[in-house]
Amino acid sequence: MPNLNRRSSAVSETPAADPEEALAHFSAMLRFEADCWDVHDAMTNGPQDFVLIDVRGPSVFEKEHIPGAVNLPYGRMVERNLAEYPDDTLFVIYCAGPHCNATEKAAVRLAKLGRPFKKMIGGVEGWRDEGFDIVTT
Image (cartoon, rainbow, N blue to C red):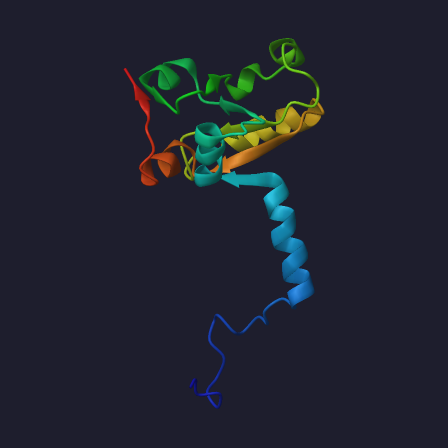
């Protein structure tokens, strides 16, 4: 049992959110993100109701990428390059991993275009950490 007579730790110094706040917060996060496991499961077992987009540059994509991904660098995310997809197409975007902010740049562009999307947390690094296949050349 913890000693409650001591001073607060850095963990408990700021009180935890009440359960209703926590529910709202974490439910909202799921509207913005998908994890590698769920993306892989949908792509392997179906239904795959999204388009997986690698938002890194073409040379990096050619070296390695997730099987089934389409390469559309965030800098090329304009309506002309998305025209082949219906307006309600759900895009799942990824980059190299947690040290890369290309997905955030792509998210800004997709949001400005009014397109639905989710970020695949972990990117290629997370995909590899899960032990899933990577296409390499």
